[in-house]
Picture (cartoon, rainbow, N blue to C red):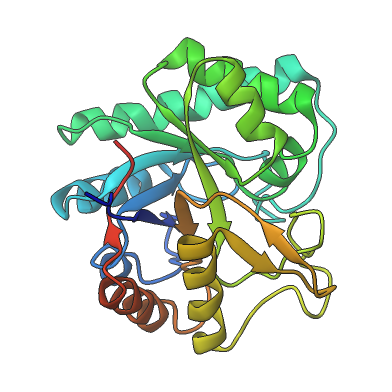
Length: 255
């Protein structure tokens, strides 16, 4: 019997704070299977964290922590120089805060995915990746670590014996080395829905993506990131889910 292909759809959530909201979380939670909830450093606040966790759990969506650099003004997308010990403590702090909200709602934390610059830097810097991994392992070694497919973040987590989910991106273009085209580049994002869906289908079914240089890049796809702050995010997530269903690909959160 041929094993059925499965994929997780994850989305960053709870990225408003105070009276300011961002994205259509409630509608996106009807389409995705995992929610990465901001922990207050790049976005989010206690009330938003609690509300988003409860909403995700009510809809049967797996909840994960989305820790970042302390950078509200830059939305966590500015690189910062921090010692590994500082990164370790910072990630522990944010996981603990979100875990308390999730437990209060009767659920449990399922995964951890770094945000923005922290995610990108840890994808290539083993010392940073090891600091994040150590925080996850010490906090709860049953958690799944989400990281860029083929990155040192995935390598570090696997070396520590943690579960991993290799992540690919629906609306981001790739470079020949498997890294994402930086957001500062004009061609970093895919704005055409059908092009993005086609890219995802290739990554999930074939394990490949075409880079901006024209190379076919091999990768592992366990989870697909759908950006909730993009225009038309809900419609795109719905269209992607339909395409996966039509291809007999099972959409579910990692075990």
